[in-house]
Length: 485
Image 1: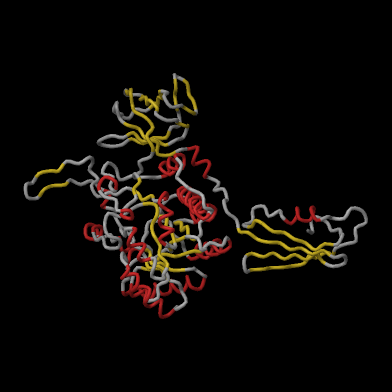
Image 2: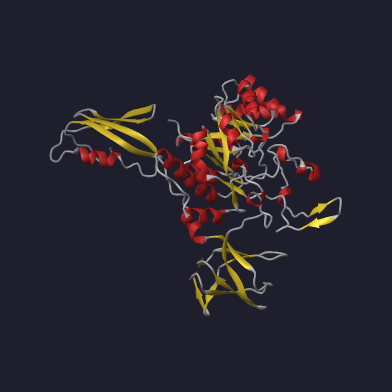
């Protein structure tokens, strides 16, 4: 059975490594041109060559986004980019522009093409058309519901679905708001995100203002369907896409790691539910509140966050005392030194780093739930203001080194015969390499190197990408310096 693909974002080389180490099956990233995230770090040509090499070394696929609309005077340059990606071995291109799609299909018939969500393919008819035109995969629009996704999965083409991250308030690829208001087109990778700004809702007929919980009337929550993952697998979805090419590497690592765990649990016939610890870690990394989105027919307050368009963090406590020089917070959860905080205010939030935490007049590096913590700060703080934790220093320190969670499995065969070189063969899936030692195996005068000692030396794979599940040997008693082995 072919597993559903865990597809992670990468806006920088560090984020790409984070995705690989966390167990992504594939990574999508953008070059310096023609990608719908113009303000991400993106990859120049040298970096892209290294990205392809690194991904393929780990057995990870790499898809490059060329998902903007192309102007006539850019077409020649765009095709030169296509040729570059084809030459260096990129696994697929993600395309929005129909003209570019058609030209690539003619000039590079074996280059795998994915239809970007920016194409706004949202039903089975659209999928059928792109299949006939030679697409290998369709990335469905984010507003496509589960019943339509199931129909599309039956059409004999790979279907990719967004599973986590930011949502757009408009139809995928069809929003012209940014382009009309500021000449920054979302279809050219430069969206100004007007949906994340404040608005009033007014009845034009009566000229009356509608009341709402908050001012951010067009700002959706973030998608999170990890607990509904089995439904998407059963539908036949080929790839689960994590949004976030502009997010930090720690975000990419954490979200990819959790999706990897959930996917593997499903195929191991184990029940998986997002733990409270994992949920809180995801919220600490970044969240606008979570929603199941249009994918599961969510509407109203379950879809939108009218209170704030930015990172919500986790509730930490409330300001109970404040004067010109300091303020105090009664904690609802633990606080560590160097955690990031935000004090919420109707007019302007106040952000700070907990560099110096004072409890009962003493400097401490950790405070517990229920304690009163004081911060020396002359900025105005309103008593009664809610406080959220936006960064957890302990979590960030744990993620900083990106522990490698998945390696490439190999098998090893070794042969030792006296007066002949030591022979070694290593296989990974359908690939095999072999070689010989420069020294020959000697007749042992005292203690020969036995099988256990030999295998121990050969299994010192250390920080390579490989792990060995199967090692065998055909050995005569022999001796050879361990350094040579």
